[in-house]
Structures are given as C-alpha cells and as structure tokens.
Amino acid sequence: MPRRVFPIPPHLLVCSRRRDGAGRASRQVTRLVARLVARQAVAGFVVRFVAGLVVGLVVLGGCGTATGTATATSGNPSRSSASPSPPPLPCASDLDDGAFAHCLEQALSRVWTGLFAATGREYRPPALDGPDTGHQPDGVGHRAYYEEDTQTIHVPAGYLVDLRAAFDGRAHAALAFALAHETGHHVQFLVHHGFGQATSTAVEMQADCYAGVWAHAEAAAHALTAPVFLDAASAELRRLSGRPDEVRTHGSAEQRIGALTLGLTSGDPAACDAPGLTWSPQG
Image (cartoon, rainbow, N blue to C red; front, side, top):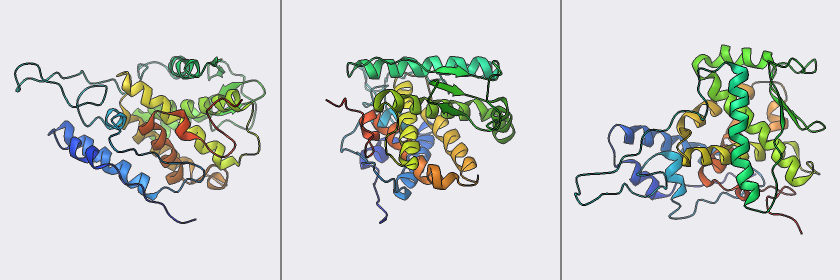
C-alpha cells in the first residue's frame, strides 16, 4: 500500500514556539506526532488534519487555554491568563492497581456517556474484572482484554506485573491506555452490535483511535496531560508489538500509534471510522 504522508498544520508548529520552557516540551511532542503521522499507513482511516483545527492545540499543549485559543490578555498586554497544569492522569497515581483501574474506568465511562448522549444513544459501562476480583480465565494472564459475551474488561494480575517490570513509575499511564483501548472494544460492541466482518487489524486500530478520543476529552477538561499519555501508550504498543502474531492481528506499533494519534488530535469518534465500523447511527 502506498505510504501516505499527512503533515502537521503549520499553525501548530508556530504556536508551540511561543513559549520557552513549556514551548520546548510542546515542540518535542509536535515533532513526535509529526513523525508518527508521517510514518503511519492505517487502512480504512481518513486523517482529518483540517486547516485551523484548534482542538489539536489542546492535545499538544502548545498554546493558551483549554479551548486551544491563544493566551488571552486583559488590559495590560504584559499580563496573561495562565491555566494550571493538568495532572498526568485523571486518577491519582498513588492508588493501588485495583483502585486505579476502577477509578480510570469511571473516568472513561463519564466521557463515553457524554459522547453517546450527543448522538441520542445510551452508554452502558462494561464490567471490570481486576486483580482484586480473581475471576480471570486461565491462559490469558499477561494482557488486558475485552470479553464480548459478558461485556467485561479483564485486567489480570500478571499483566500488571509485566507493566511494573517494563515501565515502573509509568505503569499506570500504560494501564490507562490499555483500559482506554479495551473500553474502545466495548464501544464497538455497543455501537456496531459486535464486530461484523471487519478485519482484526481494523477492529484493533479503531479501539486505539477511540482511546485517543477519550484522552482528548480528558485533556480538554484539564484532567490529563496528553504528552504523558501518548508517550506511555506508544511505549506499551512497541512492547506489545514484539509478541508473536501481534503485528498480524493488531497492526504494527507505528500504525497503532498513528490511529491513537488520530483520535487524540481530533477528539471525534467519527474520525475513527473504518469499513463496516462507523460511529454515526445507522438508520
């Protein structure tokens, strides 16, 4: 498949240079996103980098307020209204793993309840089977997964051990991505009544994109730092890509990061549409 290049709009690059210190971090994230998007080739996704898209400014943290507009001044041009820095994640990182997972799933449900309501639909949260319940089936202890029959997200204790070993202090940020991805599968189940004839890679990358949509909403609400989430999610996707058959069934790490970035920059579930898996209600 020909490689498609989607440049980052120039206003994002200009805006991220306006600040020293915070601006340097923004430029790093901007360059990261530019590389990821330029290298991704996600079948079935339409990348919608619209000129003047201010919502990307929220995600990249490059300028101004939570709405993505330039920093406002009031009377005195030397004065600016600075928003407080958002926390890295919606839930406190010092919670134990089980409590963090349940807190995070509540945060996910709040966002998806609003997104469903905007299209006249009702969101029903999934059940969460974490390390504090001990009900995970045998043989799947080293990754989080969604069980369609019971509408349950499973987070085995073995998976949490792996995250701690791989990421230490970033383990909860990686877990936040995993839960957002598995919740994306639950969204697919509710919206599409299953996964139809879609390929496994399309299903998985749409769930990645939906994870980005959630993170966009949390970042816009000052409840999440988007670069922290993107960095941890990218590291986890690269770790998982080394597993047997992972790329064949889920897509490459770069493809999946591209899908995640699409949701993170757009904040629009419809931007994640894939053949046979569309967000808009079907009449």
